[in-house]
Image (cartoon, rainbow, N blue to C red; front, side):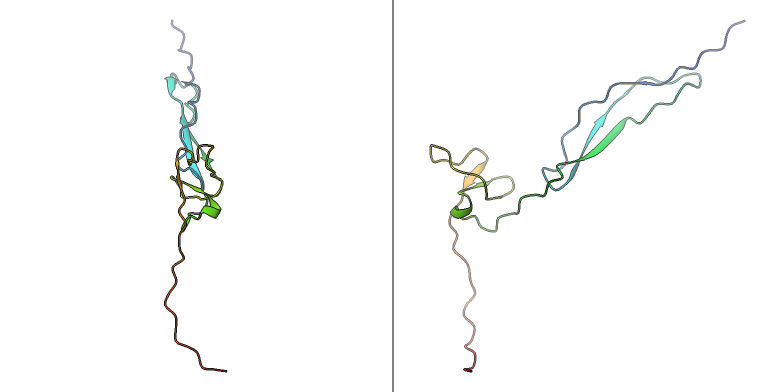
Length: 118
């Protein structure tokens, strides 16, 4: 006679590197995967999970500027509109990925009616 076949466990690859985060700030998710190199046979151990996810970029997003003023810039980030921390370089130009802030006048409503004298 022949002997029964030995159980062969599942064999998986190493994890891939983590993928890109779904958000730049404010909490996103990223994933990594692995694949089955050899499927289980003859009642061998089943394959473990093949995908894994984790939180990433959990820091709070910079507030959006309602208007960028030179006193808070003078350069604003093109991607998220944040105004602080970007300073012109030695050639008087904003760094790549930023735009020079322009002074913005405040917009106010028209005067209301005078109140009664007290």
